[in-house]
Length: 426
Image (cartoon, rainbow, N blue to C red; front, side):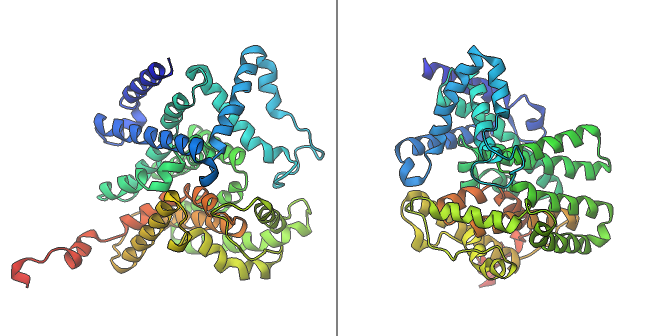
């Protein structure tokens, strides 16, 4: 029965991707759209298979834990819908809903998993609780995120369609982590909704109510599923919107806003002790350090809630989040793939520096991609000591970094330098 259901949904959604206008406006043909969708489904199936048979090795037990937790929620939805929709607001902890950045014994710490389980329980209505059928539904939903980013970048960097398509859909860790049943796919969808609507609002030179509502939905998904991202997103979004209004002052706008945010990060706790951002990062690091060491756990310097400590730990944070795993960190096939990928991406960055071409879009958009991605990577590097978790967490920002890089490479000049020489030139 499961195989028939799987095949039926696969055929239905393969047909549907060729009918949804949001997808067809990419300019891809129907076979190309089906291939992109099936690629995500295959990645999601592989993700589930790895999680089931090699979960301990790859630190990926969560995907099946989410699925198993969704089964009683599905039964509750059928038997008692009132309780099903009400228990998402249940908070057994003291302090109400105020512990926004607390990682333990907090409503906001629990909601990210609880909300995702609710989503899966709704999928179960259609999949009859079959994990791999849910993969098809989730792949269709998460495809909107990748397509949204492609449409933005394709408009922003005209004439770079092939490079942008490859970087939008085929970055290995992005495809893997954002296709499997885990929070990354929905988190990236939230980010892409925000980027898509702000970008095209700037093109149209107006923010409609519809676009504002979509932006709020994107912020909601980010906040619910990984609340610290809202701290990274708000300054970048604010700076981007202001740079749209005053494009000649883009550098000054980003410089002022991020200088203000750095000062506020370390000093707002003096006004409200509940907003102790440095301590929240330190607490997050301590939680990772207390976890049972796995194959990809590495020793790191302990962080303290002071500006000096953050400054001295910045090189380590950059190395962890943007450069590792090293070849020496390879322990299994997935870590080999991650190490190979990051070295290839760093090579693309070097090529962009050496063979750079001018880019058409306003600096505000490129600055948004860089500042938002860099702040997310720093937050990961300051708090996480597990390379598997680092690769998963950073996957959601890779397209915003890599697409401008590949679009910024003068490929024709690169081919002239490294391509085959004609006999006349020898």
